[in-house]
Amino acid sequence: DAGITQSPRHKVTETGTPVTLRCHQTENHRYMYWYRQDPGHGLRLIHYSYGVKDTDKGEVSDGYSVSRSKTEDFLLTLESATSSQTSVYFCAISESTGLGNTEAFFGQGTRLTVV
Amino acid sequence: SQQGEEDPQALSIQEGENATMNCSYKTSINNLQWYRQNSGRGLVHLILIRSNEREKHSGRLRVTLDTSKKSSSLLITASRAADTASYFCATSNQAGTALIFGKGTTLSVSS
Image 1 (cartoon, rainbow over the protein chains, first blue to last red):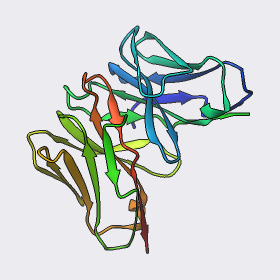
Image 2 (image 1 turned 180 degrees about the horizontal axis):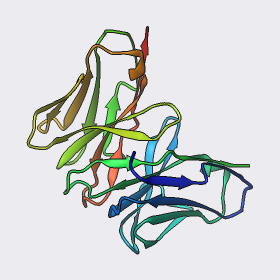
Image 3 (image 1 turned 30 degrees about the vertical axis):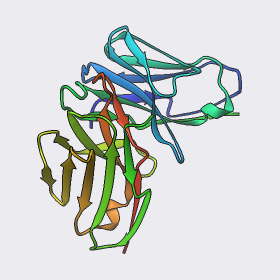
Image 4 (image 1 turned 60 degrees about the horizontal axis):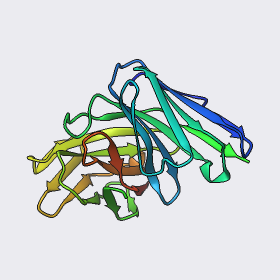
């Protein structure tokens, strides 16, 4: 398995609290992604990073921020958690995307419940 | 909006039958990928087909790509119960900086 670790794996938090999810990789891949997966919606891209300190928004970025201060770590922060952010969050990494023709590797996911 | 859309949303077959799922996309691509997700797990890469390829095989998997119709299909031959999973297609965004996934096809193979 690719060296990609998400933490925590499960979390229950209260509405209005900040939450940070961590994705750590040991593959030295350039690209990192955060997705959320919800029934009926499949995987939706929240934010992605194409290098250290280089990030951009995805389809569902409202209410989320990210940071990437070093190659191996990509943090996803819910600034003030809401019940609509209850979801399973997946981190993924890849050496490149469309131009580079390589696959993505996924973490095991973080199940977040906002009560 | 999502680049790829899989069809059907759900598919139920018997062991030994073939399973075909389709993916349509909107813009030009460099490549298209298929992934599998077992229940409660992360996605796993199955196969990548480049825009200049029309067909690709990997074991019991056969993927076709028709760039004129902006569509791809994944065929799983001689399905097994272990093939029960959700299957997703993925392409890159127009800037080539992110992978965009469809909503997936849920395959159920019964013995």
